[in-house]
Image (cartoon, rainbow, N blue to C red; front, side):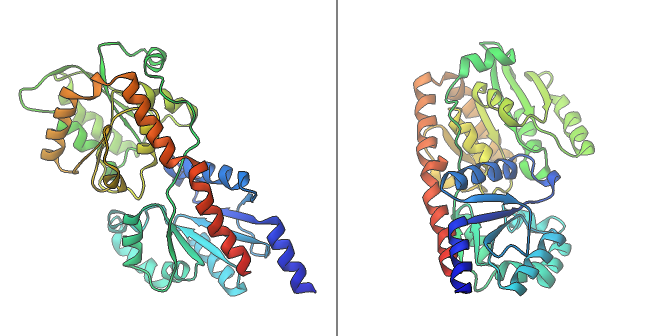
Amino acid sequence: MEIFWQRFVRMSKKKVRFIAPPSDKQIGGIAAALVGLEQMLVSAGFSVARGADIEDSSCIHHVHGLWNLSNSLTCLQLQKRGLPYIVSPHGMLEPWALANKGVKKRIYLSLLERRVLEGARKVFVTSDMERKHAGSLLNGVEIEVHPLGSDYTGGVDYLKARQRLGWQSHEQVILFLSRVDPKKGLDLLIDALNVDGARYEDVSLVVVGGGEPNYMAQLERQSQVLRDRLRRVSWVGPVWGEDRWSYLQGADLFCLPTHSENFGIVVLEALLAGTPVLTTDKTPWKDCIRHGLEITSPNLETLKSDLSRMIGTTSRDWTHQERQELSSWARDQFSWEKLAQSYADSYQQIFTEL
């Protein structure tokens, strides 16, 4: 009877506990993913709590991110108690991520993190590319692909967004919105705009995001060469939450020349806003090429060529209808409502096995 009652409690509550990264690691993509996933699970009938509780045998713990000793030790305690947990690496097993502080990560992986990952009931990844990379490192663990989504309903608002931001009607805005980190390729974008003999008099580069101060200062110095080539270069700083949407809606082109993304939720957000996107083949978006989503490579010559072509022929001339079609496609493919069932089914499978 006691075993039956414990099973009944687990099934009726369907509680998920998120074990999140430290707050300074949640900026941007992970933060948006956690909020969206939590809202989706609640709407699907689950309850969601933040933080670990190894005494809570009625829940599934869902660990977000890697390389955190406290979280790793919590997972080992859950293993010892026979309690289930899921791990979402959020790109932290991608080759670029593993190469950053690579020796320390390889040691940590062999001593501790592999036990955490291979002891998980499931590992959630966001793309086939991420599954391939994770699968090459792990043995005997179930890896499932669950893309990230968005419930954004703001749609296309190009003209009003530009008015809110004070952008001129004839100004062609290239937007970079992300963490400012070497992985994201902003240095490549700056160099790609520094085309010999070319002047983009109506083109502006707007950088929205923050990063390590010394690196930010380095990039700002690098961008000085663009003063005579572009209309302006604006360093806005970090803008998250609802305020970021005006930048995404009002841009003529969103460019993320990244060296590595397991998903790239900001690419999805730009598409939802109806803004053409240029990103790289180091993202899973290379499998979704369509009108308004173009793929380049994170090397200078290729990016320079593709960026010049898009500046000259596409982004500024986009019609409201084209933006609407791009936004509708992204919403149809990646709304949380569309993705909810696969997540719910996966969690439910674990609850039924308890």
